Length: 258
Image 1 (cartoon, rainbow, N blue to C red):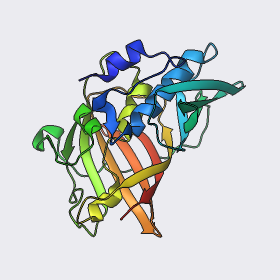
Image 2 (cartoon, one colour):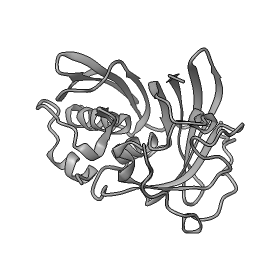
Image 3 (cartoon, one colour):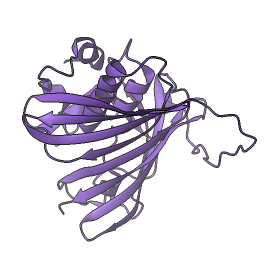
């Protein structure tokens, strides 16, 4: 098994990247890994004194089936924020486009936080998911422990997935890159409503991060399908640290083939 740490150590955005088999979702690269590699490419080509990562907008344009290359472009470097775009090419075809915003904290009297940490026990109180038939190979890179009332493909009327997740083999990886790889690790929330496996595909992913990005072993992830109709689902996503701090929030647009 090739770990994330090994991938990042050897990664060159200008050389063809062949996805290790344990990071595939079907025939394509796991979306969290492609996003993490795009961020790594942005960090590599970034101007000096880059602020912390604040947000990312990612569009999964097409399948990433061939050797991947990454092209970066610094869109703007301002006094407090820097914007960098990254294109991921599969052969000569566009596979993914990402825009990263790096921003310094600003002094402000306005402070509030309405995110509520879910009522769950510690990770050791839940069983590890282990091997799952029909699950993508990329899931093996995570220790997943479901802590909510719904499970994937359970016919639930509550399409929300809540789980403690630990990224395996990420020692030495930058915290923002590790969070990017971890953030998309749960099955899509709409799958809780499924009664049998069917294809789904993430089209867009938007996220905002706390500053600076937090490191840690276990993170609590929640994905909720807020609406599903006409073959698409819109899901919201949150990630907390073990001590209850919000780490990441975001949303995804999902295509449903069921």
